[in-house]
Image 1: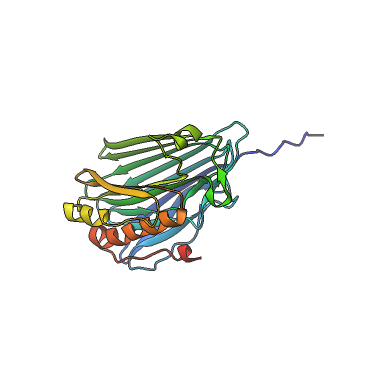
Image 2: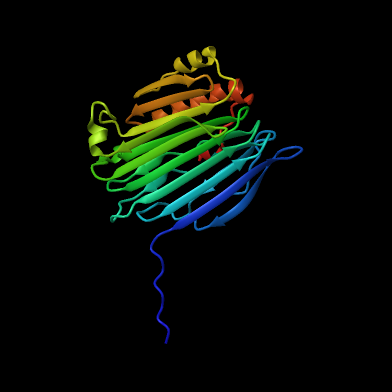
Length: 277
């Protein structure tokens, strides 16, 4: 009698997506997929731009899981990706979660990557790397939002560690590289998060950035917390938020997005429907 093989305890997921410009709209082409990471059918609430919702049906991520997202946006294609809810990273028994995100933009491609926040439960161990390859003439708006613990429940991130890396390359030349290592000491440090459990970054890449846009964005202020917008390179804008409220963060970033879309992407503000549910 053959022994029954135990089921794997961890999820290994890969999702490869390609967006192609058609005559009337951008079309999403799923290239490869295995594991629980998936995508809903595309929506077209605005002309030409493909809106897609990324799904992770298990509802949470635990130590030993690996999520691999690879997105290619071809020349002249326009895509917006978001998630229906927060991604939750739970207590790890010792293994780390590995998250890899790769975005590639061809000439005149537009990508908005606007996921809901990541929530890290106490004891979570996470390695996250976001790699972006752009081409001169392409346009990108991307944000990453992190909540350490659950402030509304008075639950602090008093154990665990999150390492988040981001790299942006233009035609294979490294333009931006960041590494954030967050644990309880970094959260409490005066030179770190200053006790604030919520932090976020918004990255804009485009050839259509100017001083007036920077000044307009800098005039926006969150309802609570601290924020700032800088322009480290002529074609890069960075917005930062640090505070204790995901709601204040979301309202602040959406206000920035509503300014950026007309001035950078030549599009009217258009919020994904899933944000209203």
